[in-house]
Image (tube, rainbow, N blue to C red; front, side, top):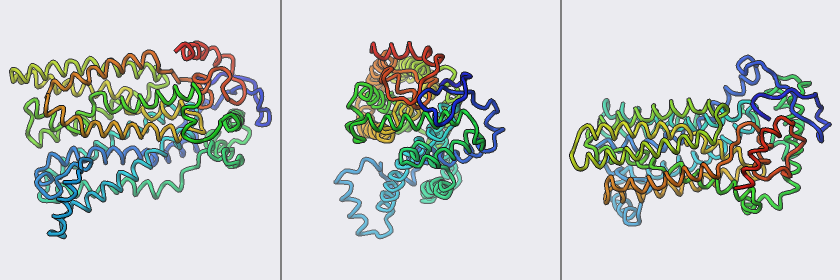
Length: 489
């Protein structure tokens, strides 16, 4: 089903074998009471991404504070070696008020909970959103990681400039509980996924939710009857065809192997395209071009997060207009060009100390993150969720997060060593990575603009895929070339 639904003969829920999409309501979502209510409730699901963004960025701001780096709380939470643990234990024994153990425990539980939330929120968003808006809404979700980063950056800047002592870093650390607390209270009012309900045999509940939010409560709406029938038949077919719902199902068929390859590659590249240099070590990067003042570093960090969010949010509204693959390609090529210039200017600054070269590096950092924002923040999650059939969707998203986390380990352990040993020469590693990235996107990424979540299976599994009902002739024509491309690759 395309975003511009084709007008087809009306059908009923019972006539599942030969249905095609009827025309949906042309009334804008903000004029439909229940759809408007649904999207307002979704803002609480978006807090899952915002919480993770705050958690992932707050240390960047804390590292600019001498009160943090000089206190017993000086640590990089993911760099705890056995020797460091022993030192912490010894200090704690001699100083009961030592904040390090509690800080470490808090970071662990916040990170653990944030990742669970981030692993479920986009699934629910994708499965309850109206098909017309699925791409935009799901892509917006992960862009709100930057909103959390903005709050973290400017909170730490505010406490750095207005407070003193341990309160400088304790206040922004404590504020991490605010967004999860709001989400916890609101989650009870958000509807369950109709696909999950159908998979559990609760068809009536699923139909009520689809009718209320996708048809504004109209029980006779033909579009919802068609949507419900397609979802139900597809889930039944998937269940019958799948050998199991275990992890091996991710690699059992050629279509699933391709999905898993794209998911793993997307997860790794989203973290290892050079962006990890700034995400984790902005302070170190800025020092290589002569920017050492803590307040100036904090201002740049805050400005960069705002820029990234605005770009990624704007591009989220283009996913159905220009397509996912086009945005991925634009982002990859843009990152390659800007990072190459960034490397060249860093080399000039290292040899001459030219302030112009240093300013050019700073400009390229902003340009690099601007082009990265066209795809990676939002599409990393939404593309992963879209290409997966229901019965392995949660496992596939978990696979994405697993490799995202592993890539984060690389960023945190390898990048500082590379920067310390090679300085700007270390950037050549990422130039090579970006070249590979562009080639893989061009030859292997599949465009998913247009079809429903169920119909996307045809792009990976071919015309014999397990999709309920029959596609409209217009959609078949739109997808023929995509299917042929997938089969050739």
